[in-house]
Amino acid sequence: MRKVSASLAAILVGLGLAGHAAAQGGPAPADKVVVIHAGALLDKPGQAPRGASTLVVRNGKIESVRDGFAAPDAVGAAGAQVLDLTQQFVLPGLIDSHVHIFSDDDKVKAQMAATTRDIEDDMVVGIDNARRTLEAGFTTIRDLGSDIRSVTALRDGINNGLLTGPTILAAGRPITVTGGHGDGSNNLNRDLTEAAHRDGDNVCDGAEDCRRAVRAQISQGADVIKFTATGGVLSNVAGGLGAQMFDDEMKAIVDTAHLFGRKVAAHAHGTDGIVGALNAGVDSVEHATFGNAQTDSLFKKTGAYFVPTMLAPKTALDQARAGARSRNSLEKAEIAAKAAMDNHRRAIASGVKIAFGTDTGVSAHGDNGKEFALMVSVGMSPSEAIKAATVNAADLLGRSASIGTLEAGKDADIIAVAKSPLNDVTELEHPTFVMHRGVVAKLDGQRAAFPPN
Image (cartoon, rainbow, N blue to C red; front, side, top):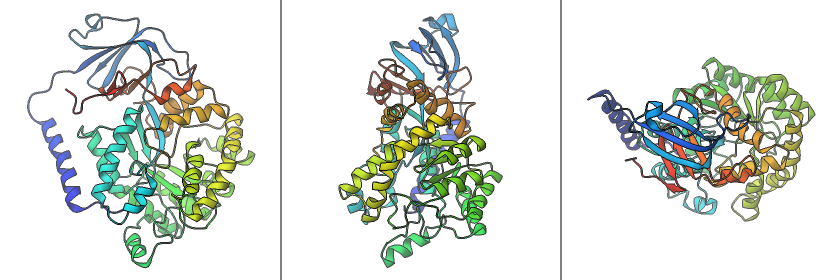
């Protein structure tokens, strides 16, 4: 990923400052109040849904949740806009704990255009991916691998109301070792290798250097830290899927991030890397393809979350077989896809804590909801899968105070589907209504106007 240009950075920062200045001056805006009538309401995933309910949303926050269909004047909201969802099933906005928002869905096209595109082109792709992700019902995402300046610009543009998209928690570039999964110079020609090394502040060797790499991402605005404990399927290097970091390097990364108040996600496929990451104190392990009874026990002992990303292995294998990935990737994809689902089934049955994540960017943006059917296919109930994408994911992200359930004082991140996803979890692939922080992004299955009227 290329560094953002000075001109683009200036434009985005300027827009953010302009929005901030407007918010500070002039008369206080009138309260924006919306009353939502829900036919059924899963306000607290993991518990039984409520019947007919009313949600009062004021200035992007949930003010109250009441039984029955209450008129606006009966809930202190005379003159409020009323949204009729009386024939729909309403629940909290979904959370995807593992996304790559700037990855292009068309892998072959992206490869062919790689030498002609600039960072500005990538930003346009990311803006479109963010919009499609929100319209798919995902109101919060954790981006686990993007150019740090680009993803923080996108994050802040959404937060300032300049762009439509989900709330983003950004990791920036994943911390990796030389030649490891995440080293952008792997198997490039001389000129491209030199360019990758100029941008490679995420590459480290040795514990002290890995502390520096973590601090580099945090200094540019990272909300969370990701590191690659093992090889990866999509890195163009024949390094396998086993551990690629020493224990002291992993421990240095985790301790440094925690010192700065950042949670840590570890990419790990091989058993040795999963064990090392959990012993180092990570907050989540992504993929865990070759987990076993030992890693299940360690997950429960440490309290770390497992983010299975079940969509990714099959998608990556299909892409590699179609020629959209390298020969190195094809060999690893064959191995990972064969092992993943059975190992995920065992981990879920053993009681490991699960948080929803897709690795979208490998799969197509907007298809995030297809992960739910895969989770159910390996033993989770629809209720458990939904809880993983709301309550559990909010806990993993450290955002339980603001998202994950629909309660007074929380962000008005609300979606609806036509029928109960507790009976058919695939309903979550087609949300009919999406609200993000009180702003409607999708209504009656159609994209809402942006900026909102």
